[in-house]
Length: 283
Image 1 (tube, rainbow, N blue to C red):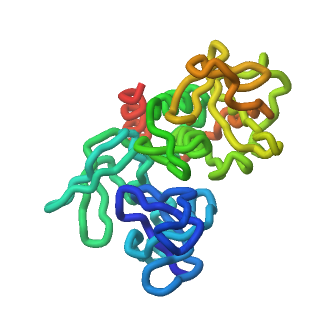
Image 2 (tube, rainbow, N blue to C red; image 1 turned 60 degrees about the vertical axis):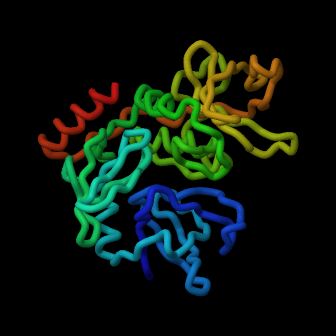
Image 3 (cartoon, one colour; image 1 turned 90 degrees about the horizontal axis):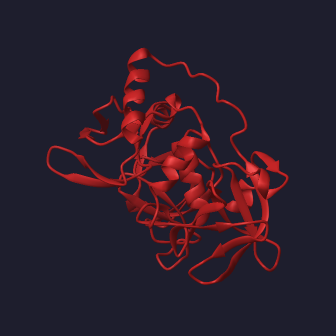
């Protein structure tokens, strides 16, 4: 079995082994993958380590790592909380987006192969985050006005399920990649009137398939990716767009994904204080 890490800002994950194939997801810098198959010298089929999503990635957009590195990088890393920020090496920069992972990050820098990178922006260690609806909402609002991009998972282009996945991921709660899988997580909310900020609403198309999702805010509003990441009105019928003067999505179900306080993590006082400061800055 072989493994890889994404060494560039964003690597498209496609349905097939061609640049013309549909992009259905993305790997962000530092995210890991298991290599399942190679096709020629250019393409590899991978299983993304975070959400088990399977697709094709150009081989020159991945970097091979050892099984021991794969295990180590999964155990200790930090997430960037900056919308867009450079990693600084001795002789070059790499621009990274919110959600990028820094393996072995010590609060200031990390090493990938023989190169040391310094990151001066806000970053957070996921093992030290307590999954809370309030933090999900703070993360999600950072994506406001990001353009819609099918298969996107970043502030420079994101789709509806990618927005929900990334907001919860950075708040310490793991979700599958697609809305049709996310709907099976958490507990159902019986009536829209009982929904709370941080709950996730799912919407169906004319064929009855789950095709959209968004994060519920207060005051009968929802944050979702539709044209861009935006805030619209929500009721028991679905999403109402004031700009278009019509309902754009039909409500299927509301789920409460964070149902109880996350268990305490085993962390050092130094890491705990670092994270406290980072989250405080993020507020």
